[in-house]
Image 1 (cartoon, rainbow, N blue to C red):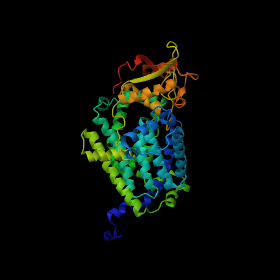
Image 2: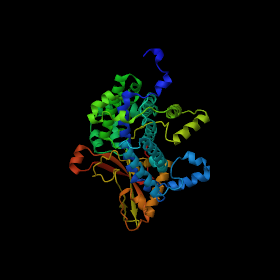
Image 3: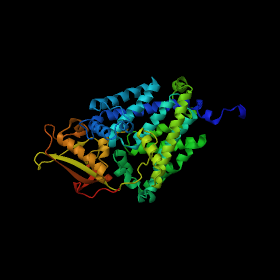
Image 4: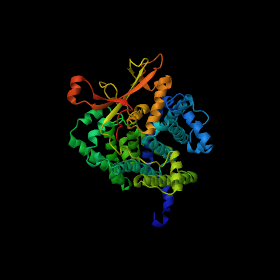
Length: 489
């Protein structure tokens, strides 16, 4: 085709890219599986976290929001639970999410399924409040938002938006480590602490912690390399994009091998798929799947292309301005900040800063109850470190939200202490929904009259200690929480 016959750039942005059809099809299937894991994980937790008898009742939050803001609260808290935020409604939303995930996985009603998955997860994201405030929740929301357009087939514009999302998640996380001023990143000692002090380590972290210090330093250098330099390869020609995908995927596999980070690493791997065209994907999939993408995508219409352009530009603008304010520690004009805030409330345009600071000690809280103030018994959590002899379990992609949030409480920030007090109140009431989040309730017949929280410093056992005692952890008593020094950072 002569240059004069080529369509203008804006048209080429929205033409289907046939060399990415199978890649787009595979990405949608992977997103469906990740959605399924996320909704299934929430199904068994959401009533205890946000139900009427949960830790942070979403029903009460909606009532307060409507009394304060009126109808504007509907825009500030977009969700499906305005008329019914019961435990049954919350669980039904999570169950519906599982159903639509399966429909998308098997390519049934893909357009409807992609829309409902985004709407349902956005609703549960707001319902969960602080328990769903994690960066992989917003990463899934934006990936799912773009999937509503991707089901019509891959276009250059959509591919660029997915690349922008992956770039932001990786590069912003790396830059935030430098901006934090944390000495453990600048002196390359972060991994000497990370495996032991991360929120929910599994047994792979114990083995990684035993590696020599020089290898930990190499790991820090590789981390910064993959987050600060590799993301720029995403926007370069094919060979460089493939290199970026392979390095990023390798890094995510290493993290999965040493960390319980819910579904985030699987999601990052999925986002790398659009860096690989169909020539590569065909080598990875069985022959009978090679025509899957071409059988299901079609040329997007004018309306859908226009909407993808508008929302895509909004995502780029909001994410850029929000990160500028985060990185520069300054403010932009109020209309810009309001636009950023409102857009992010709808699940898109967020910024990312995974592990900008590194904890150098692990403070664990043991909650105890008593009927008489003399005989104290422990509440046992399902996954967070407790008994020193218990082997840290591998639970990816499950995300136990309560266990994870307990990691933040030792900072003693006001926001953390607020929900923690509510949690203790529900234990005193004997809330079945909240107690269902725990592995063991020592008071099955009657809630205790008294509660106390003991703080301990936990450290991984050495190989010799593990062999001798069978204990994966060693711990030292600190004192009665919150009358102990807060953890910093």
